[in-house]
Image 1: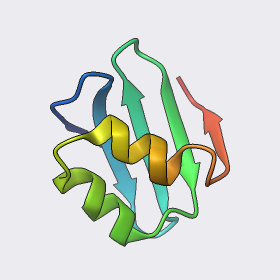
Image 2: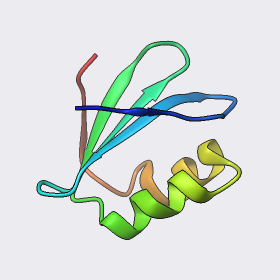
Image 3: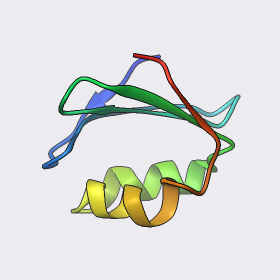
Image 4: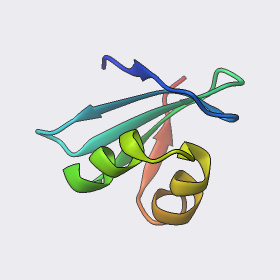
Length: 70
């Protein structure tokens, strides 16, 4: 999955597959996770919010099933 680099204190890049509603997040430490069933609206919001980490922790982490892929 292609990811876009983002400016954040803990997130390095974010990708999204609209067909499967999969959000892929790469953290600064190099870990990569995929979150499943994430609506496109949340992807759009996280890409435009000034605090990616805060948005992720509040709206995505512990709210969607996920797996570590890297």
